[in-house]
Image (cartoon, rainbow, N blue to C red; front, side, top):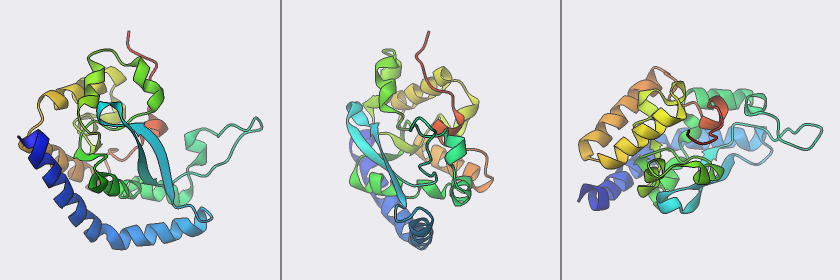
Length: 201
């Protein structure tokens, strides 16, 4: 009952309250990025959600669009701007994802939405991470995130899918808030600090 009904209600209530409370910060960051990014404060990227349905994740744009001599984007760490580094450090780049939660594409808690190109690389167990909506934070994020292997991260994701409950969600939200406040790496982006997933052995 919680997974199919109350979780969505809780997501909607908390996301709306969170967005209202954070709206002054949202407005300030958006205005700064409007100038520093020449009119483009948001980064929209297609990601697979529940049942591998593709949607666009909304984040504040923390990187520029610089390319190398071949026309390819430079590595992530070379494109992060000074202000982008600041908003990543304090997880401010994640605030727009509350709109994804309100819209219904995401949940506050769930496996993080990863890259579309990873879909054919998952084994049958890892594919279970897409049985639920992806989250702004998740069980893997409060248990090491980029400090653990892809396989371990997916193990945490599948564990969450199999054990969803109100109390587990509250525990994850509490631990996430704690990690953000002490800046314990939970805000680091998968694509910035994590190696590319090439499949499991």
